[in-house]
Image 1 (cartoon, rainbow, N blue to C red):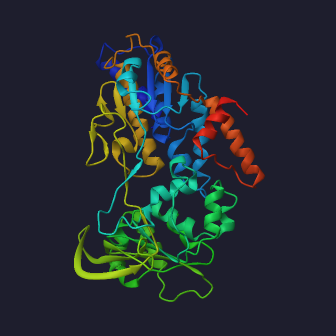
Image 2: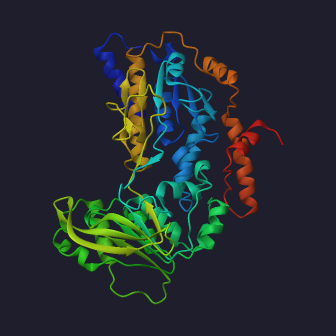
Image 3: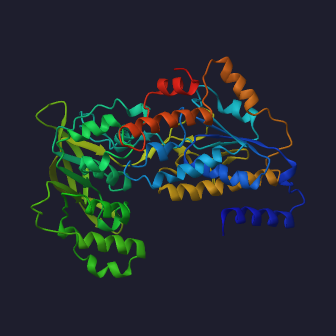
Length: 472
């Protein structure tokens, strides 16, 4: 059923069993969303459908919207970014206001938002990295895949990231889609990247890169990889890049594959088909997935301050669990990228936060009536944009239902942005509207056109704010 149909069906069900259901046309609730990525916009879409007279204010800590779509999607995946067109239509709805350059917990508090709005949705994502917690992890040239992705995608916080690509061997810890994105960017011919929206500074660094081999290291086996078949096919199609895997890692899978669920079966069949024991002579780069290995420690190389090798334990599988053996191996690597998951932060001390899991405590997206969470902030960093959409749709429907059923009383007068805007003005904080963002967008597209690209992202927040202000 279409999401709107589910909302209407839910509302009709409530009308049959409750006398307290409110006519959505009779109320003008004021809601706010913190964050402007997929989880925010998808939830807003559902709320707009269910509550015709709602006002939704979307707060974003950066001057620019779209979160993970802008800063997380690989530059050579422009089709995935087409969802920005849909988000733009939502942002241009007269019932929606985008307010950029506002930081929760710094510029405005959760308590202030709750005083100003009937409901608050937290959807600011996951912006910190999980660590391996092993010896040597503090060596230079060990960083997170998230930082590396932010670097080539123009995330302001990562624009000055320091690392060395004057090395031949890279180890990526983790076997999810982000790990494959990073491997693909490192191994792609530079001509394939030139017309994307990858930043010019990263394009220049990648053009000078000496990387020849990327090893993708996972604790478990081929049956447990987290990347998708689409991502792996792209690795197989990379020009002058050889995919090298150990045939022994696939022993016994022939008997198991026919009984696997279809998506896993197709991926495993492709992995098995791709096994080769002889290196292609025309390839000058290598992608090497390595299974059944647990990182144990890092060692320095010729430069005592930088990583030169990784010691791993060889694992065996007991069911779905990887169990370490006493066998150790050493893997040479001059650059290491951790891709073992993200975690969220507690942006405001009033947010009920599970520090161990790195997410907001909630039940089905509900923190308490009137306070909600969607996306990775509430679920942890799982799935792709599609799974975020499903989660956000459900949370958006719950928010609308709570208002229609009077769980959240929308008859109480709330000041909304009138109050929050005055607070921000008193603090001297420059806010960025969606129209202001469109000016930044025009400049980025214009600069990109000059270079034969889709856009050249502005990575300096001060420059963004200057353009948004209309000053020369």
